[in-house]
Image 1 (cartoon, rainbow, N blue to C red):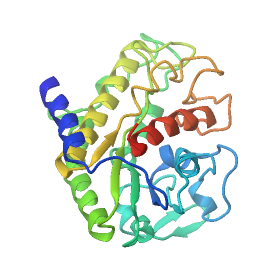
Image 2: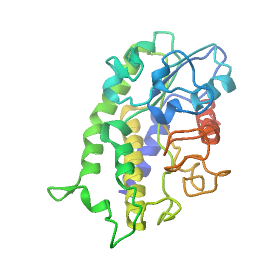
Image 3: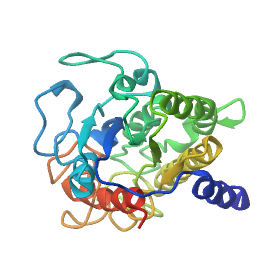
Image 4: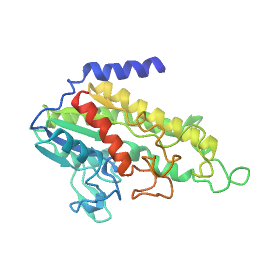
Length: 281
């Protein structure tokens, strides 16, 4: 498995077009709430139901590279279906995200898939105010027919990701495409009771997200595009760390952000990783 992951990442780098930002970049950002930045100030008025921040990593990246045109259609709750179909939000419907692409698009970031497999609900399910033997661990609730349900869902997502990249390339043949991974949501063994997820569940969440990020990297490689790792730079900035250090908020946020989503500091850290990748640094 380790060899295959390394090979996938190397393949993504070797096949993808050179990651060089240029003057006059036409940048489109696609994705879900991990990209949109729900509750991070300031929330933009258009498509308010998407809970999109003007300080999410896409906005910060567009500013840093001096993009000539920028279209951010990231939207909370989005999954791969919403790339192709109108998405309903609490405040109305928004167009399919792929509609933002055009023949002159030169740069695309896409962070999607967590809602396809239900990762947010998974973390919510593992909230445990009382440790065993009173409270019940969640990690043993997700075995179906002898298989880990989250890995089965992740593997079922793989062809959808490959097809999505192909469809982005068809609509925007000039674009450099970057699949963006997800951050670190739990350190080894967790930090119960500060974040009320018991040790075995924290390790299960961690392993599940690592498998999911590996799948994204592997599918990016298979599609011939680059992958941006957010898990590594966010290590040490997970919800267990102090309010002044963490990039991702816990169940009870101390900074404006949705629980288990990036805060403004996290968006700045993720933007640094994205900027470095698209600029070829």
